[in-house]
Length: 407
Image (cartoon, rainbow, N blue to C red; front, side, top):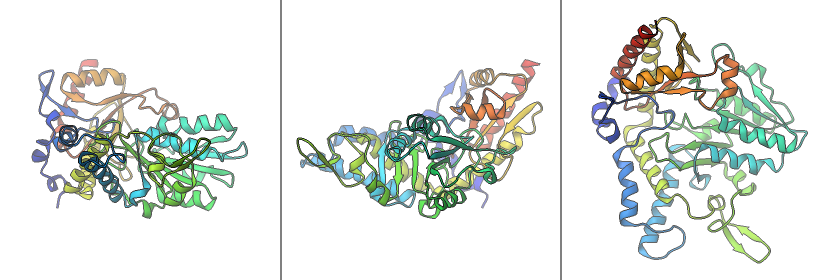
């Protein structure tokens, strides 16, 4: 079946109240899902239901409300774990991908010395550079980068991973280039040298069927708000044996098994890493978002998104005086960055907004990559399963108008 016909998009769009509005008198076309996805009413209702029906703290009370809140919170761990083929205790709830990566940098950083190195890539988001950069500044370790080639793919043959590498942390999908990186290959190289393999899954978990066992990675960070969930909730997957071994970063209530005047013993995972009152409604709503994704089918979403991206790439390349970044086909997902010659990305985004079209413009929190590409900013369009070919056609028509204006 044609993936573009596999989903009932008009029915799906009815679940997203925000899409049924006009911006500057034009129907909203939201092409910025890589920054944050829109939320279906089922997720919004889950938040409201928690506050209206069983608002209580978790892991503390034995009354009815507390028990229901705890049950729902624990179920959310199970749902997220199942989504990526992990065990429930291997899922830690955090605020977002950024916090997850910072937790790892601090926890794993206790064993890093000036003789070691940490490897990332030239295409990383700041969230997967700065924590390791600052760790290297504290310890004297060296931060190394896997370069990209002219297509915007990683040049694995020039990988700087060696016997002194302790951590390899890589984006599964570039938030600028859309490139899908060969995680299994990178993981095998990292493990060959005894290094941890960490994956930034912010752009992949919402769009791909993830099997962390098959990828054989040690940790993965991701955000709820990019996969239909609310902001302020994210996840950190870690292999059970490593989560047991490393120390937590945050301390307080809920993460201990015993406390004396001079010492403390940590609770079992994942509680060991979830100090204090968590984002209860966020976790429950994230569980609802997972239910929604699975009700449609992650594989269907992936196929649809791939076809939509290929269609958008084809239409964009019909334009004159345009530069598109990243692979033109193949190993790409869900987003396309480009520049119109002679027109600043901020001007493009502002003029598209007047047509009701929302895109991202700027350095995409990836300044090192911008320098590698020799530019300061890009326009980025990103898609989800509530987008259509008609949305892309409207984008192309508006881009043509913009080019005419700037002539």
